[in-house]
Amino acid sequence: MSGSSERTEGPGRLKVVVADDQAAVREPLAAVLGLAEDIEVVAAAADGGEVLAAVAAGPVDVVLMDLRMPVMDGIETTRRLTEEHPEVAVVVLTTFADDESILGALGAGARGYLTKNAGRQDITRAIRAAGAGQSVLDREVQDRLLATARAKAAAPAPTDTAGQPLPDDLTPREREVLTLIGQGLSNRGIAEKLFISEATVKTHINNLFAKTHIRDRADAVRRAIGAGLA
Image (cartoon, rainbow, N blue to C red):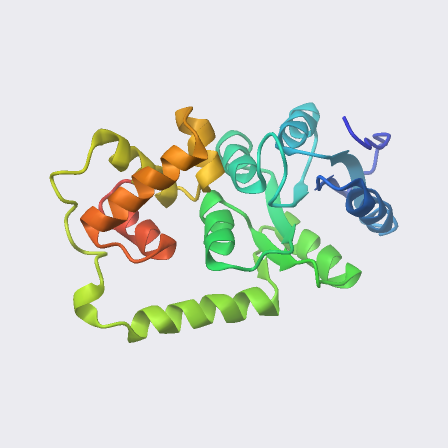
């Protein structure tokens, strides 16, 4: 495992895995977090597979998760952790603050979401909050979610598809894709789950959106939940 640190006993200390595919980010971040008296960095991982291995080796309380990683991205890794290790909290730390990334990560079970503009104190505060079962979103992410919510609220009612039944001409594969979108998976995560290419996933999504009049990813999540698929 890339950059693993020695596991030492630390009663009361939060055991943290730092996940980022760039060593220039991962290693200094792990070193800085390790200076906190109540945080013990037990492993540094370069991809989702290494994160799952570190958590399986345990014990781990919190994973500080990058979203864009090879092998398995942060959203799919978060979903796996939520399903297999619900006691482990995930705090996302990423450069991306778009709707798809935010909703995907939170839908997959992330307990916190920070951008890489966050300072060391913000990150340690988020880790402590997540370890205590609380959620933390940085200001940029909160503002983005509020703006999205206001835009949806201001949209004309006839275009809101959330309460409408799914059309009968959806293929089984299109229903599968909508279900996985509702679970917070990215296009890459859906491709890996269904053993198809990302290009094929995009084709299914385009067809799905056209048939259902879904506007965007956030609308698709709401539609999946409303249809009982997520």
